[in-house]
Image (cartoon, rainbow, N blue to C red; front, side, top):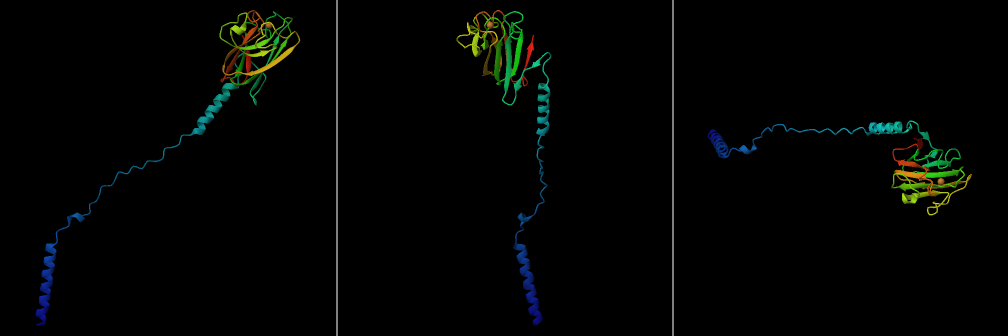
Length: 217
Ligand SMILES: [Cu+2]
């Protein structure tokens, strides 16, 4: 009897298991697939360019360019701390009367850094009266009235309205100052006919000039 009951239980269990397994659908959705490895690209940080070496090169280039003056140039007195250059100009008593520092007709060229202050000390050693003007010229060479050749930016020993007949006498010195942006200018005696007779020169104001100098051509 006991054996029969045990056999019956076993049969029921086996039948239940069989029914349960057979009736459960195969869950194919749970199949774990092995994904192919992803192609992850690791981008390293771009190397920062070395700005230090670039700046060093520029600095050394600038320095070497500006420490030497052009052939034949002579330095002008200046003060780099306050960006000022000094022009000492003389109407010389030797040679012809219409000269600046013994030169005439555009021979004397002053080269100054753009934007610097120009302080002029003009001395007349000559018998005639003379004055000193800086002119933003619009003509190639001066006529009898340099005020007709451009704009007068500075007047030493006269004024911008009396320059045609007012100057300083022999032995006198007059001073004046102005600031010159980049450009090419004349300096000239404004007394009627003096510049046309040769009493004029050139001022070059340029950002490529760091050490003021002059040249006589
Ligand atoms: Cu003059």
